[in-house]
Image (tube, rainbow, N blue to C red):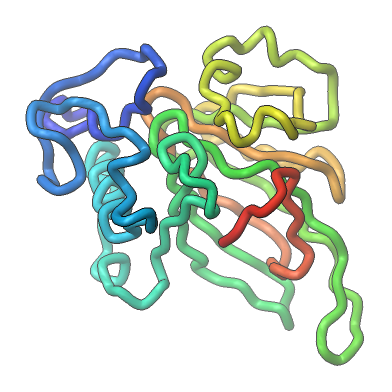
Amino acid sequence: MNNGIIVASLVVAGLGLGVITTGCTTSNSCKKGGTRMESSEFYKDGKFDQAKAKLAYFDLMTHFNVPIYPALKKDDGFFWAVDFGKGDFMKYGMAGVFWANEEKEGYFGHEIYLLPGQSIPEHKHLPTQNKEGKVIRCKMESWQVRHGYVYGFSEVGEDNLDQFPEAKAMLSKVQVPYLKSRHVQKWEADGKVHKLAKDETWHFMMAGSEGAIVTEYATFHDGAGLRFSVPGVSL
């Protein structure tokens, strides 16, 4: 790890995880002196500031010595950041790239970027039909943690959430009232690939204290089959 790279700008406010105060590689994405950022600092006039959020993810990539390709810096939607319309970005948000999403051949490649303590909304995938009436099976997916670590949440398995106090403490207040996935596993950047436990089941992932970058391998992603447990989530 390069301790000259900012991590503090990515630490979730209020988690008590400790702060590394080593300065910023991208000045607009963190406070002077390496203090923590609040979710509110990613909003301007009540609107999510995606450009500012992207800078935080670029710092995350730099922290992990991951190349920032020129294509990621273009303002064309290829690299995107989202707060899911809930205003709790530092706990409930993500960035991503769809490297491939081929309906005809049925495959999908995705990179997931999570700031420290940040989680994707709990969701599941259902079968759909394309415009020709052909059934598209529900998305099946697997994940490989490239950098950092994540907590994988699933509705399949015993309720062991209390055995992971860090993960429990980091859950967004947005997610908690609707939580269905209470079986938790800690996934490290150790080369292992973790498969969705069962079709059409609730699941999500949350980054640990350093943030995380995760590669997803999956069948075709049809947004029409995506369901969220939290009402009113938007992309």
